[in-house]
Amino acid sequence: MEVYESIINKLDSMLDEIENNIIMHKKNKVLINKDLNKIIKIAIDTKDFFKAIYYDEKQEIVLEEIKEDEANIIFLRLTECVARGAFLKSIIYMSDYTKNC
View 1 (tube, rainbow, N blue to C red):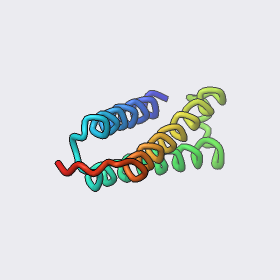
View 2 (view 1 turned 180 degrees about the vertical axis):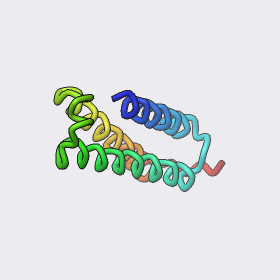
View 3 (view 1 turned 90 degrees about the horizontal axis):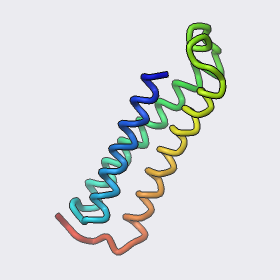
């Protein structure tokens, strides 16, 4: 459980930094888009891996360590990371974010 919480917290931190970069116009949108693609990929890959070992394969060691409600929270938080990344991508492409840094 701690491993997934750590990954999620790191993704949230990275998304916070990107959001700040957008607000403060610290990076151009090409660089922000690359960062967002990386974060979204990590979130999706982690979510897919977690889904496979917990929900699909039902690996016993994982089932013993993580209760179902905790697993659902992990899955939801990873989904939120993907959604937030997509939302930030839409901001940089739908807005007048044209400053080149």
